[in-house]
Image (cartoon, rainbow, N blue to C red; front, side):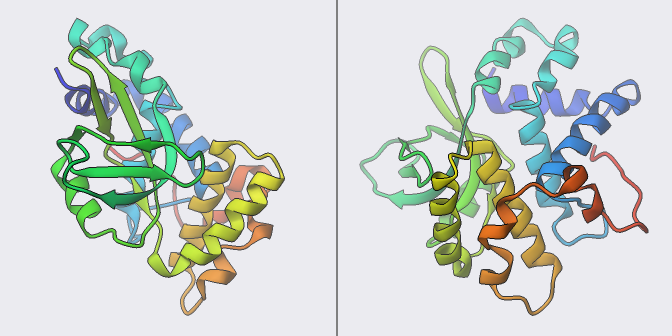
Length: 229
């Protein structure tokens, strides 16, 4: 049982009717920190995957469905909750492991070489030269595996200089990893939602602060909250 298979199973169980309230509460918190999303948004599928990645790790949703998991699946709950979240760029070198990619976390300085990457994420990484992305890496098992979880959010290439300034400001304010990367996800959403806006306008120091009411005001009134399943 791989961590990616266990993660997929947990997400499947999250689609049950009796778990709608728990999933809805997790999604509301995620949207409050990172920005709202709805089915008619072009970024809905990407943000849905990011939400579930957050729910599996920071949200500890696996505990909600633990009784329905096999022992092999349950053994991944702890590693998922301890996942390393980073703002990564890719450094490619054939000799650096089975995946052939080193992920350099520009926030913490960590360098990780994942041995397990799903097909879709692998394709995204191959096309990500010059991009920074918010992702989570899980490591555990015997033999040891290091897996990049599905649900990474890629920031636009042209936003990288502005992001570097935001990171420097976040460090000066002693912000946590989650606070900093959540703020960058809010900025990424703003850039995509506002037409003809330059990256420097969306990715700005003032946007590091969490909006009032945990971002609830970001959701247009015409949209009803829905849980991705």
